[in-house]
Image (tube, rainbow, N blue to C red; front, side, top):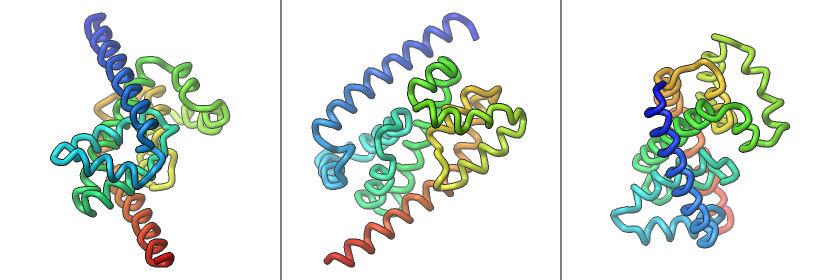
Amino acid sequence: MTNTKKQIINAVTIMGLLGSAFFIIYGIKMQIFTSQTALEQFMKSAGVFAPSLFVTFQPVQVVIPVLPGGIGCLAGVIIFGPVKGFIYNYIGICIGSVMAFILAKNYGSGFVRSVFNEKTYQKYESWLQKGSNFDKWFALAILSPVAPDDYLCYLAGLTEMRVKKFTLIILTCKPIGIAAYSFGINLIYTSLLALFH
């Protein structure tokens, strides 16, 4: 990779992180990351820009994993309906996954360790020793709705896997996990609403 390309990637990364930081500060202040109702109201108030804002929200919760991803998946289905909600979840989460991979690829294990606690890193560090088998294990994990996808995307960035292959795995395997997670949470949510009302 040439120095110019590295500088462009670094500049885009910094701008993305600054934009994300601003959005997170605003989101925390407005409680959109911790309150389902606040997130719904925020999206509805955006009118025609709601889908764009939602697709922006999802990568943030992937790249900065302290945010509860379940809130975004559930909100997508509730606000936009099952089909559009799934599509917006899929687009946003895939973008965030690729961003996490590129960040890890460019900044290494030290950066990944700073994003996650040491216990999590140690738990999955052995995956890095799988060599060419990592790709298969990674694809299987991404298919699952309960795997720590966000972390595994960062971990994949520490391997020899190329962006093209990573993106292909994410685009083809993510839909199953997102659908199961989104509709599973929505089923639980609607069942609880029916139970208490």
